[in-house]
Length: 313
Ligand code: MG
Image (cartoon, rainbow, N blue to C red):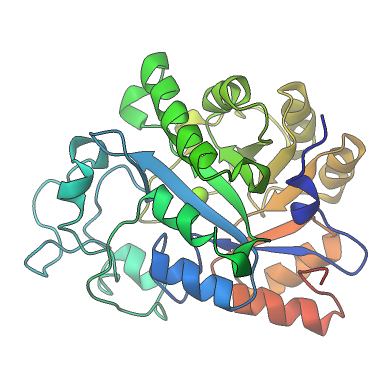
């Protein structure tokens, strides 16, 4: 099958692709319309985002399964106190009471992004809100790396998994965005469901080897990522065996041999989340297809300094 989405993510001579991680998390609040608008304004045409669903089945763009006090304020304007509510326990209307516009600088997570702008009155968006923005003619070339987050409390619940995938795919189809969307996950069972329900969209297999540490202050995905016991070189074959089109390794896991193997298997290779200039340079030298980053400006500048670009036009 030919996928129209693939050329937008694949490297070409002189071009390594740039993907804005959660928009541009290093500089604006993650997974917000404000962050996505900024990323698009910077000329970045590939957006990564995280999606889960509310109690009333509305796909919303947020990373953690619980509203996290390091990044969410209540209606009173204060960081959340007490138990952090699960997104899946709230209706979309209830979710609108919360503000996702900034980080608590005293938290472990907040300290990781000291330059992120602090906004007020920012809501967790619906997937439909972003899809509507991308209908505008000026965004006709924007593609999505749409990560579906599996609920750690519902691992193995095939009905919950199917309902989540169906809700997400339904929104994408309603907006006729399938030709510009790639479905992405750490949970390979969930990706199998995506392949069954939405064969018109490529499946993007995230991997993270157990040896490298999780990012502090956010949900880990290792529990659902079936790569224990693998080496980096095993991963492309595992993805190909699962009939994936994209392999997305943690950037500290990838090796030149593994990248060569992925290319031989016809996979698009996207590394995440690459933020430090020396790491960006290393990924450019390796020759990956795409770099997913919290700092799109840093990758733009490094690519330009190497005589490369992130777009073909
Ligand atoms: Mg993600």
